[in-house]
Image 1 (cartoon, rainbow, N blue to C red):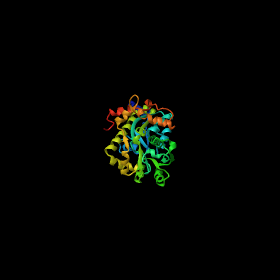
Image 2: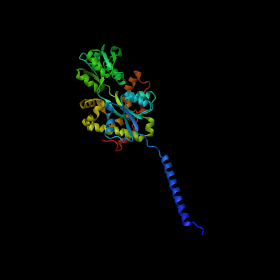
Image 3: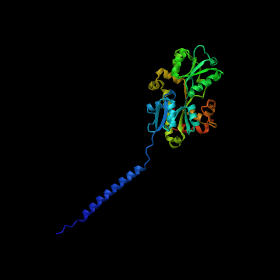
Image 4: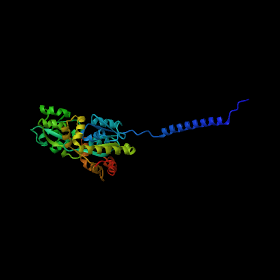
Length: 342
């Protein structure tokens, strides 16, 4: 008798085939959907050199106050390296001095200042031997100064304070670590220095005759972001500014504990680190927003003298476009949220 295949067996096989087909379609759909999802956004890369005025960023990173998924802090050996990396597109943001920022903008970089971090309030200074008691006494004397924009700026203000022209003095271009030996040997009569290196000069008997308290607004640290980055990744920029404020709050509330953590990174003792902090003025979130606000912008008004000096020195060519450069929006939004500690 011939074998007859039952209908129930065929139905079972067809059901299995349909299930396999459905599973394959679902798998293909999941793969397709996964391919359509945007890749996770890389953290915002912010560069800074080892300087006490930038340390709230390092403190925020080290204490977990900065969202590492949103922001990556990159420490570089010098401000020159920070500028080089920024120019080459390797950084999205950077902690820079205001004069460095104006130079970048003058070169054509489309950048924004989104926070004012700190200002030198005595941390940059000029020291001399007993024969020099004030800037006027420097006529005919030799002054050691580093070949940096800040060094040149302090020298300019020093000469103005003494009613001197640069032709009235001899300028010796020396790195800051060479100043003490040059003073001791008599090769120079004064030195443009900064904390903490200035502490060694004071300990050797040299006294201050001028400091950055006499040049308010000239030496300031700011947080700079590419305009394109600010437009495309505002949440990450906000996370960066919020992280800075949390780090600053921690540094000010726990100075000794913070100094123990941070001092080795800048090759200082805890006491020297705390002494350096006294020569800096850090800006609160509200103060930063106020400086970046107004019509005209307040920081622009305050830094007009700096801009004119940089033009006279040939560092920049054009007057800064302050309305374009200074952005208060990020800080304003944070002030109305829970992102910034009191």
